[in-house]
Amino acid sequence: MTAYLNLIGNQWLAAEDGATFAVDNPATEAQFATVSAASTVQVLQACDQAAAAQRGWRKLTSVARGAHLHKLADALVARSAQIGQALAQETGKSLQDATDEAVYAAEVTRYHAEWARRIEGEIIPSDSPRENLMLHREPMGVVACLIPFNYPVYTLLRKIAPALIAGNTVVVRPSNNTPCSAFEFAQAVLDAGLPPGVVNIMAMGHEQAQAMCTHPKVAMITLTGGLSAGRRVLDYAKANIAKVSLELGGKTPAIVAADADLDRAASDIVRSKTTNCGQLCTAVERVYVQDSVHDALVAKLKTLLAARTIGDRALHPEHMGPLISATARDDIHVMVQRAVAQGAQLDCGGMLPGGPGYFYPATLLTQVRQDMEIVQDEVFGPVLCVLPYRDIDHALALANDHQFGLASVIYSANYQDIMQASNEIEAGELYINRTPADPYQGYHAGWKRSGLGGDDGKHGMLEFTQTRLVVMKY
Image 1 (cartoon, helix red, strand yellow):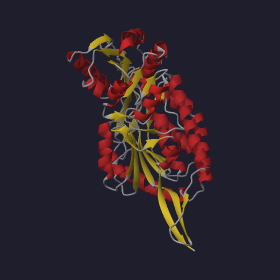
Image 2 (cartoon, rainbow, N blue to C red):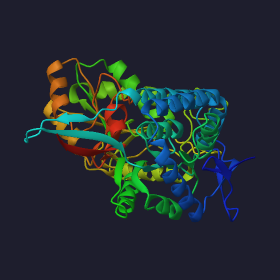
Image 3 (cartoon, rainbow, N blue to C red):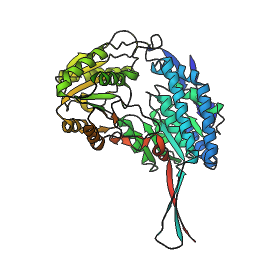
Image 4 (cartoon, rainbow, N blue to C red):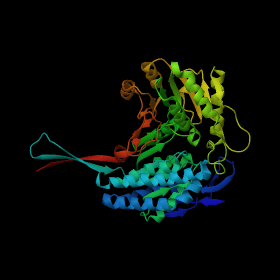
C-alpha cells in the first residue's frame, strides 16, 4: 500500500500527529493508499512559504516563468505512467484514459506557458495634457486552489498553470477522494526544479481548508466543485475580501430539432452522458427534443444507453466505470426513485447492481416535467431526462428555465434557429451539432449559479491578475 506525504516548500512532510486519509478504488472498494492529513499549523506554514516564494517568483521575467512551466510539462509527461496509474486506481478510469489525462494536462501547461510574451497592459488617453495613463497587469499573490475528483489532474493544471505564468504561487487542496494523482504530480514539480514554495500540495480536512483559504496572504481562491462548496468559499473569501473564481454546478441542456441528424445526436449525447459515469460538469443531463421526432430519438437513446455495460475498467476498458463513492451512487438512485414516484417513466437502468464497486447503470427517464427535481438539480451521474418541445422559442424557454447556466447544446440544420440559440441561450457555452469538450484556448465560464469568473484561454489566465493604474505627468 502506497503512503503519500504532503509537499510543502519542496519538502515531503507527514502530518505532525500521524493522521492520514484512506483512499479506496471505487471499482473494487479496496483501499490502496493512504495520504497524510496536513495539520492546521502545516497549512498555515505552507501559505507563509508560498507568500515568501511569490516575492521572488513575480520578479522573474514572464519568459523565465514560462521556461519553468515548459520544464514542468516535460516532467509531467515523463511521469504520466505513474500519475495515470494512481489516477486510474482512485477514480476507476481506464489506465489509458487516466494516462491521457496527464498528457493532456501537460498540453494545458504548455499553452499557458506561451502567454509569457502575451500578458499585456494598456495605454489609455488622459483628459489632462502631458499625462499618460498606464494600466499594468500584476499577479494576485498567493492563490488557494481547490480541485475536484472527476478530472483531478487536468483541473489541477488548468488552475495552477495560468496562476504561475501570471506570477502567483499556489497552495493546493486536492479532493480527498482523489489525492494520489496530485501527489504523483507533486514529484513532477520537484523533478522540474520549481523554486521551493511556488507549488504546495496538501491533503486536508474542512477545518484546514478554511484555514488555508482565510490565511491573510491568500489573495484569491479558485474552486471547481458543487454549489454548496462554492457558497462555502464565498464565506471564506470574506476574511481577506479575496478574489474568487468558481466553476460550480451544471445541467447541460441539449436541444434536438426535427431536422437534426438523430443518429449523430443520440450517439453524442450517450457518449457525453456515460463518459466518466456522467461525472462531468458539462455532460448532457436534459434533452429537449422536437415533439415530431420525440419517440424516434427516445428509441435511439434507449438502445444505446441499455447497451452500455458497467464494470472495472482496469479489466475491461470498454465498460462504463464507477461513481466516485457509495454516497454519490446512493444519492443518485434516490433521485431516480423520487422521479419515478412523481410520475417519470423509467425506460432503462435505475437499478442498484450487486457486487463490489460504486456502479450505476446508464438510466433514461421520460415523461418527466420541467419542475421535477431530476430536471432542476444536478445529478452528476449517468441519468438522462428527455422532454418534448414545440418550436425553438419553447425549447429555449425550457433550456433557460434553470438555476444553472454552464454549457448548452443544439442539434439543428436550421441556421436561423442556431443563431437564435446563440443569442438567447443563458449559458456560458453553446456547442452546435456536438457535445461539450472545453477547448482550453476558449473560456469556460458559467452563468447564474454555475459560477463566477472562469477558466481557460486568455480570459482564464487574466483571472489570476489584478490591475494597477499608473498616472504619469511629464
